[in-house]
Amino acid sequence: MLLGVMLPARAQAVASGCNISLDQVRFANPLARFAHKLASEEPITIVAVGSSSTAGAGASSAAASYPNQLAVELKQHFPNHSITVINRGVGGEEVGDMLRRFDTSVLTERPDLVLWQLGTNSVIRDDKLSVQDTSIRDGLKKIRAIGADAVLIDPQFAPKVIAKAGVASMVELIATTAKREGVDLFPRFNVMKHWSEADHMAFERFVSPDGLHMNDWGYACMAKGLGVAIAEAAQRPVVSAKAMWQLVR
Image (cartoon, rainbow, N blue to C red; front, side, top):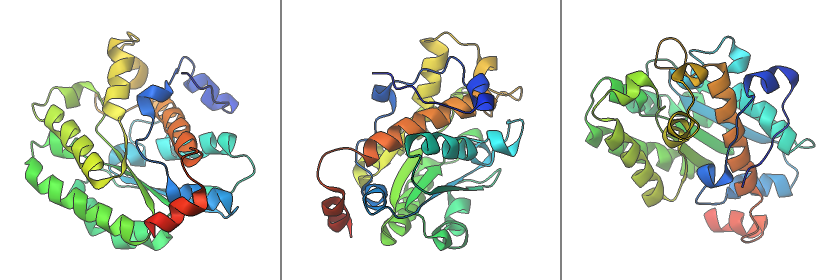
């Protein structure tokens, strides 16, 4: 199933040819807090925390980062709702670094949804996975403690990442942790791998010249997929938004 998303003129040019299948990005769990805020017509705050690919390294401008592109996408899905996307990406950080600033950079914003991009720098630096596992769970506990929804975002499928021996283990660790902890996963690695291996796109189409970070097109297409996944999970008719919210409180 393919969902089309309307974008402003600049993003339309960047994301031309971006076909995102809902089956590729569908979240395992509904977004209870997000759904509650939609139903009650309250403003929604999203915090995107991560490293350089959240901050927007490789993009031509701050506006082309994935969090800013996502804000545009969600405006198309929910034109009558106030949704703010705050970018808390810091280049070079690993999971432990992010966790140390959760209280001051993430939780103080009182987010309804936290998008946590992680794992790439640990792969690049050949760090041990066991440390990451504990830190990820600790971060998710902090997010749950304030009642926010959480989505983990795994590493990018880019030349300098896939050249590292530990990337498959990191992707598996993040997916396993998301499943075990009952939070959602945006499978960026597999989405980008699909662009390369199924859609036969050259890396230059979606990766910046450094061979590591995404470019404007890559960030825009990622944001499109995230927008589709968030919109579907927030409106999923499993139970009422009020009932879901009561379950997670």
